Image (cartoon, rainbow, N blue to C red):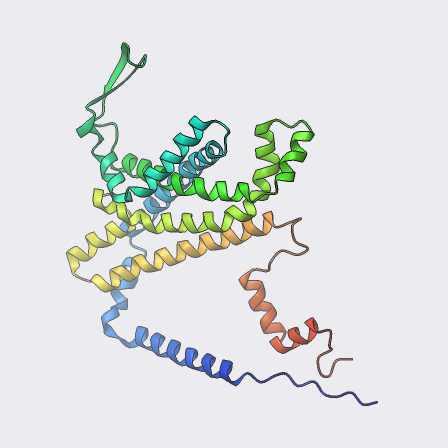
Length: 309
């Protein structure tokens, strides 16, 4: 009995939409290449300039310190919010409420002007004698104020992300760990958090990327991060568009690196939870080039592609 040929379905609307997107993309790229307003020579002159590279490094430092301190404090706040102690829950809730309500720029300026409110800080007995005092005038500089403001702001959002991941873990996991006699801290570290990471990672990665781009707000303190340095340069030479493109390209490059790292970490924590972790974008592109899409659809339906033995 002769087998009937299998003809893949025609999706003319999809093809038309794809062709339209390709044409619009080609027009946009053509405009980038031919429009003199982009001033690509100036762009390439400053893309790897020493001052810009130093600003990029400072931006990376601010992101790293803000993320490390913010998520460390965020985990502590999340545990406090899940505590049975009403005092700890109230303190953690108030912190999250306050720091999510106050704009980041206000927090940064507050820490930058700490000496205006408190000329001296001291160590001693609460409401009693002070044994050691020091002036705050030179205690908190622009970099320290930026790190403190970013970290405390990030901690409020990180606390909710971590708390959401923890409560998503099945309660039976904690009950089984308690039945084995594991201490609370070890239950959290070895049982709960590894499972919660699958739910925490996507939102945490979004927050880190937002923090990385949000470091541009520290320019209000004249701190030489990427955006501030670009402003200084185009303030001197008037080349606004190419200098903004320099900052844009660096933000895109570093965000792409963070995205790749996020995918690698997600694949690691997906082991044991899925038979095969979700393939990355490069692997999917390679498979799409090696095998036509309609062949994959036939394989899912259990049919052999035309011409196969």
